[in-house]
Image 1 (cartoon, protein in one colour):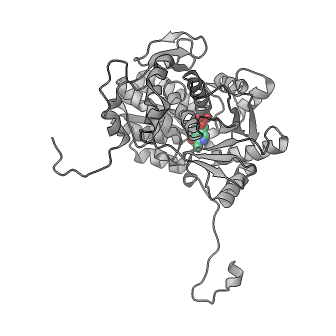
Image 2: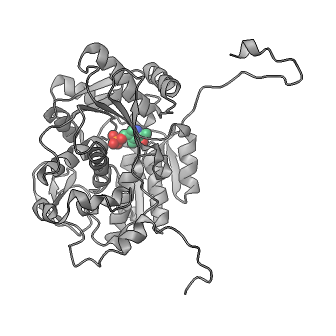
Image 3: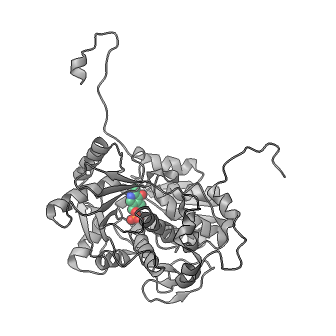
Length: 426
Ligand SMILES: *Cc1c(COP(=O)(O)O)cnc(C)c1O
């Protein structure tokens, strides 16, 4: 039925995509297959997959040769500033399956008072649900729609659950969300309000993951855990594509990334490799620097001991909930990404995170989330240690809006009935 009254609105990115020529089978994307990240075994595209047959994350592979014949840098100029401008490099086959809440490109903010002259903050807090989890879950839910799934479950420290709930409901799907019991209250509430069923679990995210995994058969849901489904990584890959485009296809010297499950770090490394293969960038790579909290630093420990896999981190604790991940499914991929780019892993204390958050807000007017603040704390630490210099161009990732997190109390007040001592105010 036609709506009686239609408002005139700007066409959204999704509408725009819908207006594209209808996809001939397989031609709206260049996906060839999915590849096991451990064994390289091929898995067929267009089917529901979790982990590979060898129990490792699956990576989406594209016909990059054909893609580079079709897509040119100049084509991007005509497209809306959102993640779907890179649609040929993304897995959704039929644009009608795109589930969108407006996945805008995020600003790359140049700073001048944080140490070096080339320090940029990539502010991901502008995305739907206020965090970069929107990139991954937008892709996962769009692919779930394409593959005919309708009931999704996820273990989360907060932001991933919020993003999944929002996109699942946008697509008319059911969402089941399991959070450690100290997940920030605001996350619990946004998840619930966005129509998901959400529970606090008296354990860590790994315990929540177990509940989701064991529920696959009895509850009939699809497990949307980080890296246990193949498409969140493709969504996070857009951070790397976007960064490269914003910097004129010249990559920076280093990227500080707050690393929990590591999807973003792995996704960006994949993005850069694909961009080189289609000839849009050269062989220079930013050093990928995994930032963790001292109270939960399995990747740092593995990096420093030369291991390929990380051990489970006992008694994980930090104010930066998004990086409180004691065991990461893709640990070996994170370590590989760090090592092959000449990067490293480093840990910072909660007190340094709090200080960094205060400093960046005060010096630059940018309110970071604790995980984003951890990247600045790590930058300062590494300047001192000498693994980074002031000359290096660096990107600090602020993964969520600072407004979602507790802030120090304010006690100052004025009595408007009394004379004001203005000298005391300034
Ligand atoms: C999830 C999350 C992270 C960690 O991202 P990964 O790509 O999973 O390592 C960092 N910060 C915030 C705010 C997050 O929500």
